Length: 194
Length: 289
Image 1: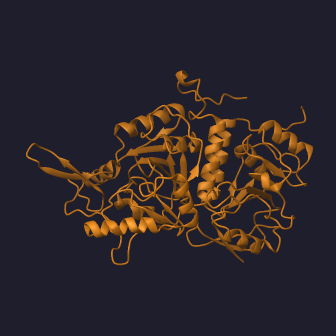
Image 2: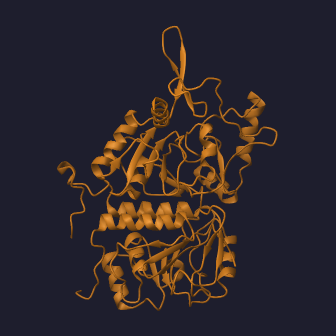
C-alpha cells in the first residue's frame, strides 16, 4: 500500500478549484486551463489527467484504461483514491484514459442514446502538448466566432473521426486533451475544421 | 488530512464544505459538464433533500453548492431583488456553509443565483448565472408523460409547441405567454428559460456568461454555454416581442429596465419601479454624484 501516490491534499477545496477549471474549459472549448491543485502525475499519467480523475471519477463511473495506462501504479491509484470500477470493454466505460496513438481513436465508446445523450463517455486523451500541433478551427457553443486549437500528436484522421462524432449529435463522446498540468476540452457540440 | 470543513461557524462542524458531501458534488459536477456539452438538454441527476422546501430554489442551490468555492463572490436575487426572503436566506446559507463572500453588485459577483430574473447589468465572461427552475420540461403542459416528451426532444419534434403558440394567437390575437417563454437553444433543443419574464429572453442569447439551470424537485440540470444562440419561438407574421412600458422607473427614471407595478394608496394610485434593485440603486447613486 505504501507505493500508492498521494491524492488531493485538501479534497473539498482542491476538487472545487479543479472542477471550476474543467468547467471553464468545457464552457470555452479550445481554451487551455491549468490544473495545478492536484498532486504530481501518477506513473505514466500527466498531472492534469491525474487531477481530472481525482475530481470527477468515483465508484459510480466505470473507467477504461488504454494498455499504455493499464499499469499497477495507475490501477492501484485509481482504485484506492476514487473506487472507480476498471472495465475491460470500452463500451462499458463512462470515462476513459487513452493516448492518440489508438486507431480508430474515439470509436467503440458509449455515445448515449437519443432520449439520454448524457449516457455517454468522456475520453481523456493524453497528448504530448496542447500547442504546436496543426491548427484546428473550432466553432460552436461557448465560442464567440471561432477558436483555434493546436493540439500536438493527434492522428491525421482526427478531423474526420470528429466529424463523424458530430453527426451523432446529441449523442457522441466528449473529449478532454491533457498535457503536463494543462487541459483543453472538446465537447461534442463543437465543429472542427482543418 | 487537513480540515475540509468550513470553520467560520462551529455549529456547522458536522457538515461538509458547501453542505453537500463530495460524492454528491461529483455527481452534480458530472451532470453539469454533460449539460454544457449538450446545450439545452435536461440531464437527470440525483437531487438531494436540501434544508428548505421544494419551490424555494433547491435545484439552484445544489448547482451553486457543487460549483462554489472560497474564492467566489455570490449574489442571490429573487424577482430581481437582493433583499427578498428567498434571496437573503440563500445568501446567508452559503455565507455560512461555504465561507463565501457575498455581494449585491452584479459586476462584483462571480456566481449569481437567480429566481425569475436576469440582471439588467450585462454579464461578463467568467461569471456564472444559476437559475432556479420549477418545471424544467417546456413541453410538460402540452404532454404530461415524461417518456413522450423525452422522445419528442430526441426526435426534435416540436410541432406541438408551435401549435400551442398558434392557438394563443387564434384566441388572443398575439402570443399571450409573458413568462417562461420557450426558447430554442443552438437550433436543437427547446428549453424552458425558467419563469423569467419574456423581457429577459433576449439577454440569454449569446450571453458571455455561463448559464446553469437547476430543477430540484424534477431533478434536472441543463445549461447554455457562453455565446450560444438562444432564440425565442415565434412566427414570421407574429415576431417575438418584449414587454414595453409607457412609464419610467419612479426611483431612477430608467426606461430600459423591467418595471414592477406598485399600488401605493387606497385610491389605486400606481407607481412603477425597477425590478432589479441593484441596477436601480446604482443608477440612483450615479444621479446623486
